[in-house]
Image 1 (cartoon, helix red, strand yellow):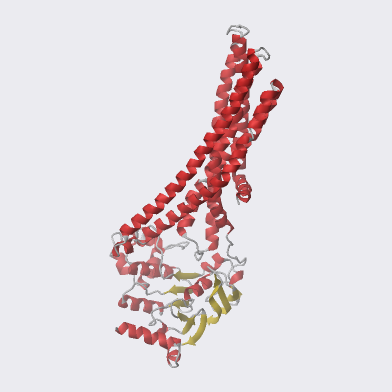
Image 2 (image 1 turned 60 degrees about the horizontal axis):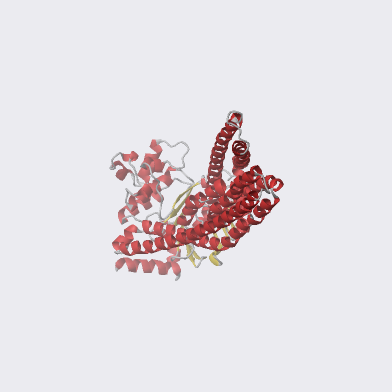
Length: 574
């Protein structure tokens, strides 16, 4: 798997190819400066120690050596800065692409939010060492040893042969260890995803856990998952440290062997001091890029583990997008023809054929799991039908640009979402040019005006994160007001009276049934009192449409609708 991920990670590096190649180039120049330093230093030591030359004639060499030290520091700093800039550009681009993919998939995508968040934050962050450290080092570990060998072989072929044999042992050992390290790193990443997902679930259900006295139990579960993650991390680090120790041993052994061979020949006068000293200075530098690659090899393993999840998200199929704008119309007449949708091989909506007449109120009812919410998502364009089609005034919805369709409608889900900010900000969400009078009117129609006026700051009152400063009923009314403020000709409501007391629910229903003429309204209802006043009722069961008509006509015959009404009334009387 890593063989396929590495080339793709390389392709992601094209987002900052200039900075990345610049970092590699500066690293190569810095390495060649090191070779120049070694040559000057060997000449200086040889001239002073064996040729007995004073410092004055060698002053220009000393200055040049100092200049090379400064030049090397500058190149190293520049390489670090360019590598950091490249990795930052790559991370930013990846996160933007992932966010675009999430938006393209729509809100109905079945993906764990904690996994997605962990992948976008921690997962992308693990790629930084790969691009800023490992990738430049991979080029250096090829170019620098070859340059040193090209200099060493003419000076002493025996030392060159020792380095040539010892050098490949380090990458070979890294590959052998890599298979074990990759499995551990993959397990470490899975533990991190599990920890993030569970922790988010606990935070979202903290109130429920408190009420049922299970908060302490969850603390122990999180502690156990955290400890599993710690143990997996330490196992990976142990292998990384042991690998570094073994590689250091091979490198030190090779350098010692070169030194011993030179020592024996120098003692017997079979070799000159200058080439021997120069080779000894270059021998440690020969292994520096290889050791650096082994140090950063763990970064590659971490990047591969997280990249699998990143590329799974990026490769998820996007919803098909239409290419034409929605035709302008005063109202919407919607027809579903043989509509079907399957999830994980199971039909959720099957062969659904119905018409939602323009300017009429249609209520969809049925037991839980009947496919009502899936049908609403198909109508909203959040899901693409497996087969069949949806016609809007005769225009196939599959051919319409989604944004064009969404601008034409208003939607209130069963669990509305308010965003951090003021009530006015939430009411004006999605409006190009909201005016306060329009927002006030929408709030009044949704029976939200009085409670908004009672808030400190009124329409400027802060709702908190997710509407935490409001009750469930208040959130529902703000969401209804937000939908009304759009003045849309199509309104899709998923249980609009949820979280409301019976009196407020009755007022809300009055507001819905007095919408301006020409408004097409589709309501998913669990409280069947809504259906009694509808122009049309559609009854779903097992993803199919089994009954349709008005309240009176459906109550006149035995069937699912009458059974639902009777059961709900009996439940209300208990």
